[in-house]
Length: 299
Image (cartoon, rainbow, N blue to C red; front, side):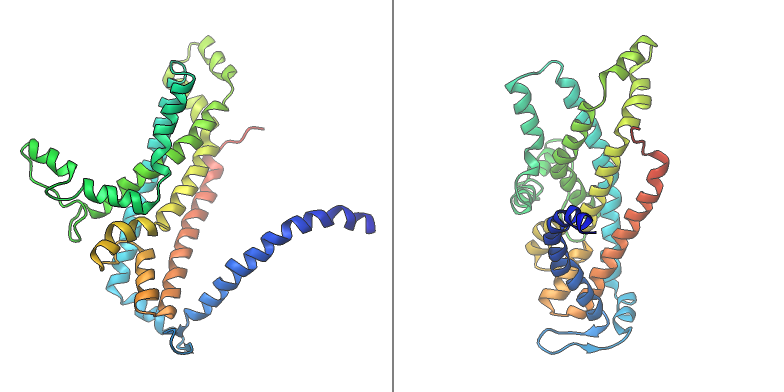
């Protein structure tokens, strides 16, 4: 018994800081927020239990419904395009390694990855200027071709959510691409050599070798992209909410922020947080359930 304890004790000691942090920074606040979601809590006064009143209010709140739809709209655009483009650019970068080597290859990889480094405040400000009516480069190009301007980031513009999604894709592409790039470099060359001997085409090698071997990497990027889509606060706040000082319906995270820190309605904000969290968990669980059919691990 003593020998077993001495063998397992170091492991428990290493895990202990994480368990303490998880309890203090996640589990305890989550339980407290769950309680607050059943209360009327305006910060300046003590929370009072109100049963399901917050839930009834949520179902009748048109701003919440709009924010919920826009969050899904953003995720549906962002997630698949992010995954596909990351794979395409990773394959291009991997192929370029045959012709570009040394410092040139390092510079090329740095250029691809650079958008992932600056904060959303910097990236958001740059894109606001690029997309601005009248002076933005994109609208100037449209004028040169004789086309009318587009209010890319206008509050009532149908292009607002797609524009935010594509800017998010541009910023996150380098990170996802490098995960794919590492996966590509870990595929044994012997598999491709065997396919060449059998007369396999490039498409056949991509379909039957590259994609199955990269399926765990694709699964990882898919999970990361889903989490990013449902937690996309910094971009939404910088490019829309902070600029206009209103219109929090672009994303649930921004609507949560407004309810919690502008109107100090912590009870209602806690409910929104739980709805957003459970939605993200539900989508993640669906992906986890489906991955058994298409993710292939080496044995």
